[in-house]
Image (tube, rainbow, N blue to C red; front, side):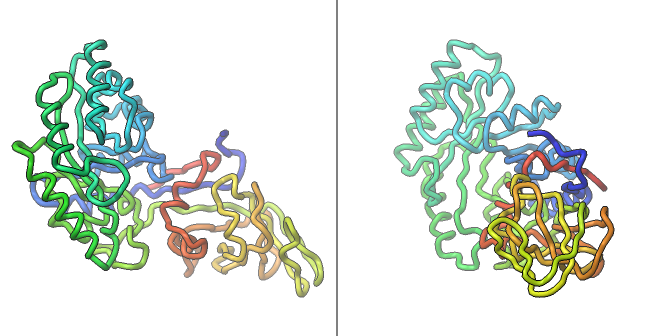
Amino acid sequence: MVVGVHRPTQLVIDRQALHDNIQAEVTRLASGCELFMVVKANGYGHGAVQVAQVAKEAGATGFCVAILDEALELRAAGFNEPILVLGVTEPEDAPLMAQQHISATVAATDWLVAADAYLALAQPTAPLQVHLGLDTGMGRIGFKTTTELTTAVTYLATHATLNFEGIFTHFATADSPDETYFKQQVAKWQTLTAVLKERPRYVHVSNSATSLWHAACNDNMVRFGVAGYGLNPSGTAIPAPYALKPALSLTSQLVHSKQVVAGESVGYGATYTAQQTEWVGTVPIGYADGYERRLQGFHVLVDGQACEIIGRVCMDQLMIRLPHDYARGTRVTLIGRDGDHVITLQEMADYCQTIHYELACGFTSRLPRVYRH
């Protein structure tokens, strides 16, 4: 997909906000605990490489991604720090990961066996770094029993092509005020890891929510994700221990303004019909850019005033009701501050009955990312 540089619609990323969020968490960590910044999904829509650079400056010592290609993007950009792929990769990619010093998440011993065979043939200069994932209640990937874990650890200890670098789990409800299930997962984690005779280099359970509200669990590494982007992992359920600064705003301009009279309709399906004479403005952004179709009836800011989105959001454009006529080129704020009013990703998510993660990750590459301090 092309980047729409010849259109007045852009995502603006505040580097200073990113830096402040990450550094605030780094300063809270106990001595010896490292912060790996999670930059998967193009840095939650903020730009993986740019976020990684800011995170490094703010004190991050490594990175987490979801798929191997995201790790390779960071290596190609010149990052030499440790990188952990959190998702399951293909065993045949083990030699490439070893060559690029990219750590693999492993959730089953048969993966180790298959990867070892590929590594033996390729004979890379360094072993593959392995993090064993434990399923303590997330139900996604990972070893579930002490028997399975012991088998994997024994295999790692007896095969030189593989190095046991880390062990981790992921909490399903660390962002919930109800800690019942969280405590069950902690107990399962403790039971599973009790079989380890020797700890690997990295022991990590904390995502943003865990590190913010259950810091006693952090051990020696945290995987800092959504909070680094200034977004509260719990939505509005639990206040963050420090002020999070949203790093993303979304702006555009009016490209057209017209007057409609009572009885005239706007948009596909004629779902909006004017009840009186009013001004309608057109904004060049739509669901192909990741601006959700379900945001009909929400609002944007023009001249510091809330203007309702009327009619269905189109693929490339949307229409808003204006208080009066405005000139073409007038600024439109879809996320961020204009005057005394602000629109947050959280507000948009609440309106769409989803989470801010989904909206941030959904902005497509057609939207240019502009980075400012």
